[in-house]
Length: 262
Image (cartoon, rainbow, N blue to C red):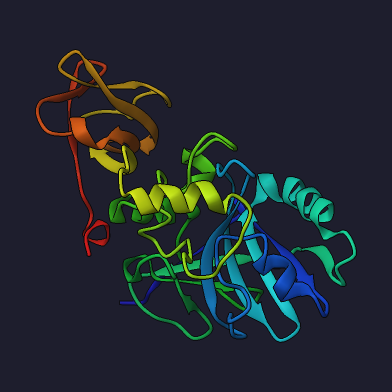
């Protein structure tokens, strides 16, 4: 069977080039940019100084810099943020209107493996690709794998990256040294006391409203994020996911995907 390929119009690109492109991004992002090889894809983020998630990013290595894959509705905000940090760095930061494609259930030439988990498939940038699936099909696959979409599940400057599973999805390089928000992020990891995480939940019927309360008996156990009929992501309290969970009076089960365990 041919692999499924969808064009992701919800994503957009920024091209960062110039002599200082890699050190400039390396000092800002949660991911190691200095060792990013041309054609290699990594997952990361730009955080606020207090360590909350601002932009989730894919980073594609280029011969002369880095291509950033960001939520389309957040691209202009990211361009402005990078301009603020640029100062005297010798970099050019500009929008790139090439297409973004995702592939799953197979392989195809030109697609780089999704760095979060192999089950998600791959990504490719540029033309010359024929889609045979919709972006909604891709989102259904992502949710089935149990991976959050930070652009939909983590309102800007509200969520810590570890709560959005960046540490489990290869989105943070804890060995690389400084990045914006590093102190808080490293402290959370070092202490190992992760109280809340995004995990998929299952239920009968349509998805509850974003922010709907997840209950364990009468105790708050989390909140529902984005979803569809029968399944959604939720930010859950890990100490309250055992027992009878409900949302809007409906029974709920929390699922722990394979990628959440070593």
